[in-house]
Image (cartoon, rainbow, N blue to C red; front, top):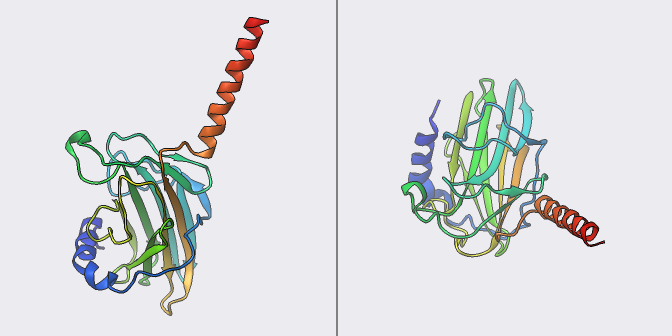
Length: 225
């Protein structure tokens, strides 16, 4: 079993070879999952990282059962991300600005999770895309993963991921897709999420604020009547 930190080192060392020529122009990534909720047992490679709501997909391949999860979450003490309850998150632009002694990277991270129950090696691919500029990159894990749990939390300012024109200070929309493949290369299934970086409340939050405002106006109207 390879640890998440070792995976990150290997991916970092092999990034140039894996990413060369991989930028493509294709359809935007859109949310995809079996369930959008709490991914019990996940840590996303850290402590205090939220596990809900995650885009969770479970597939089978022969004797293997594979669970994949994706989430977008705040970094350190930044505000929690909003979400629309359907796979789209809302984040604020800008850098972490030294919160908890860390100034590297944006205000949010991508968390990914893979669990394999079985013995046959499985192949995985993470595709991440700037839906605003149409630039995308597919990063294949450098070797098949075997039975066990693999998970980590990354951000697009990391050297081996910053290949799609990412600017932490700019508004934009980013899609992430984690896909499993069989030994013959057939897609088994995927989890996918979207992150809107614009500092605008998500749809659910907007309706909640609107409801509070209307309730306040109704109360004021009664007081003035």
